[in-house]
Image (cartoon, rainbow, N blue to C red; front, side, top):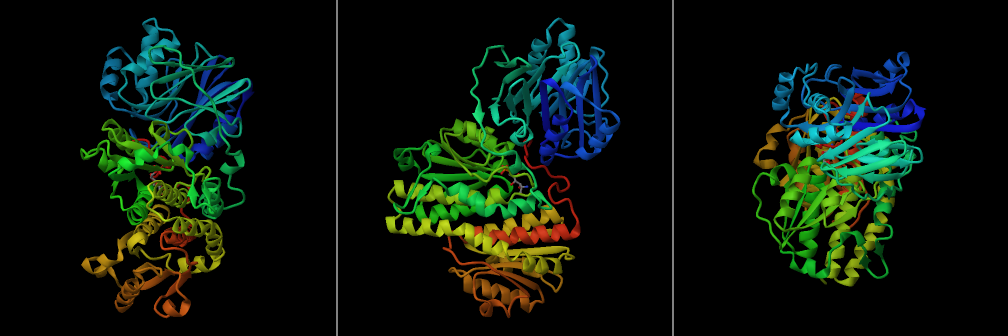
Length: 609
Ligand code: M6R
């Protein structure tokens, strides 16, 4: 949560901070601010609300400078307000921060005792005061930052500038993401890559406990104890336009429509339909490692957890290896039974979700092999994993996850086929057939996307409903959960996803003529049962929207709205069934006029517990 940016350059820059913050607005958007050194003084502008408010403010107070830091906030300590907005300062030392300082009350009391005065309710404000306190006691700027960080308990990514040394920007991280951008004569820091992409694609990922000092002559990275670290840079092959809306009304809509390409990018170079083989070089796992695995636990949060539930079906059906699925926030606190015979599969779009990362560390400490499925190269989760399968979905900016989800399922499919081949659990002809099914998916998604007008009409008819029920069975039950989550988060309509077989055990009581029920009825072994569920809903006056690959005459008369999707193997049906779910949620939210890309109370990357 929260996004931070900073830069130092030979030339004066006005735009980077605002443009960079706009790219990070998905991380939090309840207040924002920037600080620069101008005419030898620190100049700060902050305001409540989105970056556009800050931008307007800057029309009257231009902030041209060769050094600056900025912040977009998702409130944890203290309500969204100008006083609580970052940057925070103490006598010329100015800080932006992403994370939570757990011992801030204790440190605040100590600093008050030294005479420091506080103006906000935030945990962050103690940082500039602490740095200032160490400088007063004789530390130079860098030593003071190190001393302050050593006293802090919790998570942080910070960027600091200091009026007394206007040619230096110091930045550091612990459990919150941070990336440096390297260009000639200018250096950048940001919480995420899209913020710096329009300036450079050469990046350095900072690790926990590292502190970087940026000057116009270059970047030095050291440990908190001052030991110099050699860091390698990485070239990111995302282009800046990938992080733009490209004519779409919202990022979410663009990202829904990018799914055919995202899936092509996720499978390309990784499969051979002729040989039936899957290649996952970054998985970093030997056949012997795989043979030792007695149980796979898939851990994730939110939408990624829904992909994990699909993964359980894929792996158990094809590999017959037992799979547990857990939420990061539950796993980390339940003293899990895990050891060297276990494989932990972490799924995360951002690679920065705090609970998923903590669960990973728990499993790693207990000796499990760790593999992650992730969309962001070099993110925290990938760096502590033994192996990675990257979803090549490109930057996902909309807070509601779409293309990351479908590519996560594709990555799970690839992992299953790869393991099946290595352990000789899947016959070659079957593997070839499964890969053929896979390569057809992008075009089949396009067929669904072409039905946008029809789907919009069906969705809008129900946009005034106050509740929705989503039903699915088997491998499509997680898609019912995902459909409900998408609708909830962007339209603010209450929605529940349920396994259809459980309907009679309670939720059937909800059904009346005001309740739209979205039913995934695809022609797999549960089809007849799903038709039975549709009858049960209709018999009680409910409104049925069916998502089906059955011919219209088989289901049309029973449902109030039918969205037809192409047929594929039952294992890949969740990918196709997801697309109408996303389109329904988007159409309803757009019709209601909610803030689709930045829904209230949410942030894209949940880097705090
Ligand atoms: O980056 P991650 O995949 O780890 O994020 C997990 C969840 O926070 C995320 O999927 C969230 O549920 C989305 N808002 C769903 O659209």
